[in-house]
Image 1 (tube, helix red, strand yellow):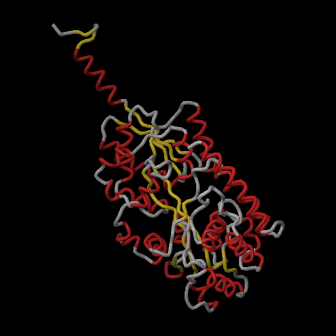
Image 2 (cartoon, rainbow, N blue to C red):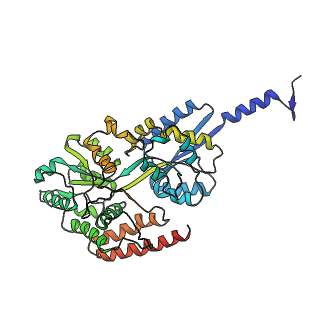
Image 3 (cartoon, rainbow, N blue to C red):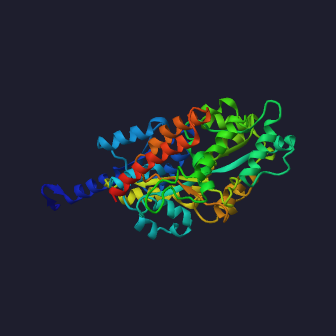
Length: 421
């Protein structure tokens, strides 16, 4: 006679246990969605499922334009994913709200943890000093240039300084129907203004030791004025005051303008339409202090601490983040990989990637980490900076008036952030 436990046979209990194991399901939310990257993600997830029998992964793809609001609604409504694609500017918000799991112990025990670069771990710990994500790549600013246009304009070599850059823009803009610079005047253009301010300040610090914004120093104002002058002198297309990402990238690959400062994600569209022999990528021009401060951003994989399957969730993050998968993902989405040795891969040993790796490894280039720890920085970047920068470009306000508005807002946000520490 079979033993029973509260009316269930031992065999039945075993069957229930196996069924429970087989029903383990993870929800992964991607927030920077496109058909090609989603397909790549599905392939990687399928390999994870094959290696982890009994675990299935539901992929929820959110359109980038509404991703912030949709993810926030999911979390507020209790539909919290296990794993999420986490942009840098959201990480501080969710970590600060106590919603993300620390990945420190997982990374420490991971066989590939030691090959994560120092910058990768610094970014992982950006929110309060604890690793709340495994970054999957860097969006690092560098300068694309059109070799043919520079040659036609008589520019002997690509510029290394801001002064040489302005001179090159003027020479290209003298060509019939051509402009020097693909200026990003609309959403996302804040990076250009902040890089110029940092280069003139000679510092990557957004606040002084006593918590005052550096965005309206006399030096920073000179940096803003440089961009205003570029636009008002006709060294950028007139309609670039309204250009966003798609427009500036199209402006470059169409040959409308000779220079484009962008992250590696722009390389995908450019390489589809230009021969590699016709363009290259160099570090951002240095300022009067001999340094350039290119913005650096990242996206990674995070785990919500409400998950009931943290071990499986971590295995998924580790799988997506291992060196081989990371290289595949970096190529597909246009980021710089996060493991040491990636620059030795033949795929990345080209003129087109040289500017980014030189930036990461060069002493003259200090990556500018934007203050995403401030809850109101997203509103500043997407709304305040866009509106006021466009006013400045059009001559409706001065560089100083814009700078003072920015500094006042940032001072207020810093005070609120500091009070919560």
